[in-house]
Image (cartoon, rainbow, N blue to C red):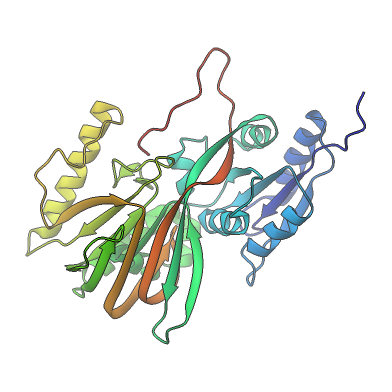
Length: 335
């Protein structure tokens, strides 16, 4: 017999992304089955995507925070949990679910996902932190769990029709890609990786990835691992009329080989070139000749004149499904 108070879960949910009655029934049922107390509920708003709600949950000394929503909700909750030892559980919802996909979590099993929040095991993953400098010299700090990007991918996010995205999911990005690729503008930047010598580069796309897979099971960064203490950097600059077809063929080749080799490193197996260049590191500082759009985990964050990104190894504790009986916990794999 113990006098310890029961454990308590907090649910930070996006009301636009979830079926609240179904979600509430599932969470309260699993909490009762696990012998936990009544869950606390925090609804995100237009002005607070989850950071403030998450901090309120942590102030209440909850034992797990459950994020119910899309990629934006997960990123905001992770931002609110930075520096906390409390685990974060994911209830995938929305169109992307990029972190859940990269962790190979089940996407369409609400009861199973809720059960894992109460009965799963904890796994530490890396957390990206980025300081964005604006054209007026103002600065703001954010986190990302999947990737940060400038160039074509940021323009793709900007050009995506929100109404179509709600109806068609990630298919909506196809038209946005076409529109964005017609944009011939380039990023002229000066950057330093891990405090090394400053370099100048002209690219169409710059991506800093903590994970490697995009929707549609496209592996863009084959060596990116969520808990290896490094982020992967992709510098893309297609050249000439056949530049984009060559890049497409290279990415398709990487996906083919990576599936054949079941997670083996593939980025360096083809001849390095200036069209698709991969690097790894823990800090990246860059300044642009002209401000450009930046995106974090699939959400647009306006124009950046410069940024400083770094990785916090093991900066986020995730609650994931416990391995089946007799099965060892999965080691870190390319995601």
